[in-house]
Image (cartoon, rainbow, N blue to C red; front, side, top):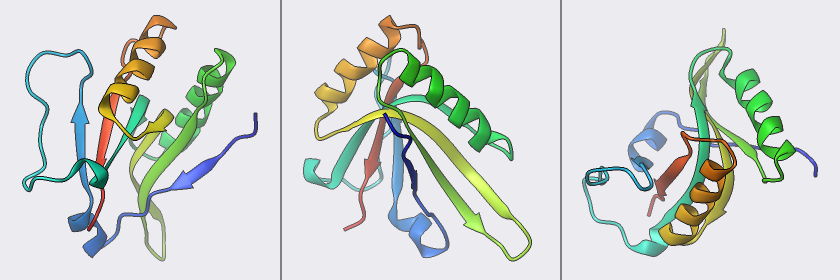
Length: 130
């Protein structure tokens, strides 16, 4: 399976239009919700394996993606960043094992990932801009 990279660029006004909501699949308590209600078709669900911050985040995420693939799961590395003339600021780097149209499908993948030895796997919900 070939490696895929996708960039989620969040800069300036784009930051205000993309709401990231973390939901711990199977965890206690209510998920954090976006301030405005969003229709189900305006959201996408990812089975997130890990997140990293800082300058080493991309390399660490790539290594983690290799481990996920070695266990037979798909893995994609996503990042949000801002490019400055002198440097790139990585705000968020994540390893996801699938994108799903429903929460239930993402939760099922998270359960499989946890069973395979990825105890911090969780559902990442992205509210899409309208």
